[in-house]
Amino acid sequence: MKNNFIDSLNLRDFFDPYIIAEVGVNHEGSIKKAKKLIDLAVKGGADCVKFQTYKAETLASKNSPSYWDLNKEKTKSQYLLFKKFDKFDKNDYKNLAQYCKKKSIDFLSTPFDEDSVDFLNPHLKFFKVASADLTNYQLLKKIASKKKPIILSVGASTLKEIDNTVNFLKKNGVKAIILLHCILNYPTLNKNANLEKIKFLKRKYKNKIIGYSDHTLPDTFMSSLVISTFYGAKVIEKHFTLDKNLKGNDHYHSMDCNDLKNFKNILKNFRVLNGSQNYNPLKLEKEARLNARRSLVLKINLRKGDTILDKHLISKRPGFGISPIDIKKIVGKKINRDLKADHILKYKDISLK
Image (tube, rainbow, N blue to C red; front, side):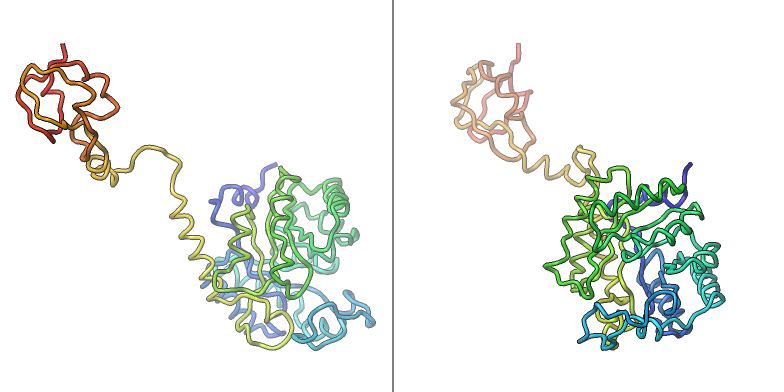
C-alpha cells in the first residue's frame, strides 16, 4: 500500500531533505514560546516541527541519573529535568497541531507513553520514536497499531537491536520504517558524529529511507547536516531554539532560525551546482566552443594546385575552419587557390575530388 508521506520523501531532490526542527521542550512550558518556535521554523524553511510528549512520572524513576553535560544542564536527575518541562496536556498539543496546520508546516511530537500515542495519533502523518525507546516493545506495539510510518532514531543501538526492532515493527503491521543515524550524547563532539554510519545504514537497509538526527554543535557551514545530506540522508532532525545562548536543557546544541536558513541556502546552492546529467553542450557554451576550439591552419604559403601535406598544417584557435579531427580528409588534397601562411582552412579552399 502506498503512503503519501513516504512517496513524497522518495520524490524529493537529492539536496532537499525533509527537515524536522525539533523544538522538543525548548519551549520551556510556554505555549507562546512554542508558537514562536513554530513561526521561526516556518521562516527558516523547515518541513516539520517536533515536540516531545511525556509525563515525568511515566518516563523516569525518581532515582534516574543524568547522562548529559552537567556544565550545560545542571539538573542531575532525569526525573527532575523532565518534571520541569512536562507542562502541556493533550489540549495544548491539539492547539499546537492546529497552529502548525494554519502555518502549513507538519506537526510532530514524540510520544513517550501509550496514552500520548492515542491522543497524538489524529494529528500525525507519522510517528517518531526516540533512540532510547528502540527496545521499548510495549510502546512500539502501541505505535505500530496505528498503522502509520515510523521514523526510528537508532542512537546507542547495536545492529542486532535495530534488526530485532525493525522485524518486530514489521510483524506488527508497520509498512514504512525510516531509520535515523544518531549519537545519543549531548552535545556530540564532531569526532564522535560518525556520519559514515549513514552510508552503512543505506547499504544494509537498501529498501528503507535513511536519515540523521543530529546533536553536534552547529557551525557556520552546518557541516554535520551538509555532510549527512551528501551521504544520502533524506530526513534531517535537529534541535531548534529561539536562542542558542539560553541556559540549560537542549538550547546549547540546537540550531536557530539563522542556522536553518543558512543550511537551506547551502543546499539550494548545491542543487544549482548539481544541475543536469544531460551531456550536450549548453547554449551559453556555443561562443566558447566556436572560439576556443581549434582549426587546421597553414604554416606556410601554398599556391593553387599544391598538395596539402601533414607538415603544412598546425592546429590553432578559433574553431571556424576545418576541425583537426578531420585532418586525414584533407592531407593529400590540392589547394584550389593561392593561400598565405596562418590561413584558417575551410573546405571551400580544397579540391576534395
